[in-house]
Length: 191
Ligand SMILES: Cc1cc2nc3c(=O)[nH]c(=O)nc-3n(C[C@H](O)[C@H](O)[C@H](O)COP(=O)(O)O)c2cc1C
Image (tube, rainbow, N blue to C red):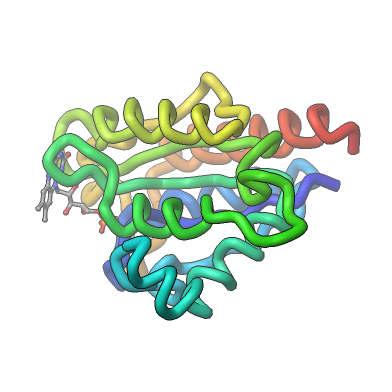
């Protein structure tokens, strides 16, 4: 069974991106994946600096996030777009998780794992531009980034008062993305 880690790059409690990644996770579960959904806000670490690392080592939160990545076969990531880029919180979490440890394979949290990308925004492009650089970064870290992604525009009109995706067409798109992630990861890891 494919094991997927699902999270958004938003630290906001009513995050639209958290809503869409949760919906995609349902699609992945319906197609056989075991999915762990986390909130990145629970894994906040100081801005990465080699000085901080040399003085204090890896913060517990960053270590816990890295460990989760290591324990899963792939990720479902929904990133907000801030000024046409993916979020700084996500970049910081990735930077910490990219740091090695003695006896560990290089980039153990990323290399050979899958990534399924999505974004949501109240704007017309749905956060699409931020995914361009996120896709490139994750590929450079050795992840298999699936070519299919979703950028959900006008997302505030597609979510109900409980913060759950309620628009049928959007649910279908996100479930389909989750299905792809489950199948792609299972194939790649021969599960
Ligand atoms: C500083 C800032 C910059 C933003 N830049 C963009 C942008 O470039 N493109 C876009 O579609 N939305 C932009 N937004 C709007 C975000 O997409 C919106 O706040 C979104 O809801 C954030 O994601 P979340 O709901 O998951 O927290 C920006 C918002 C902020 C606060």
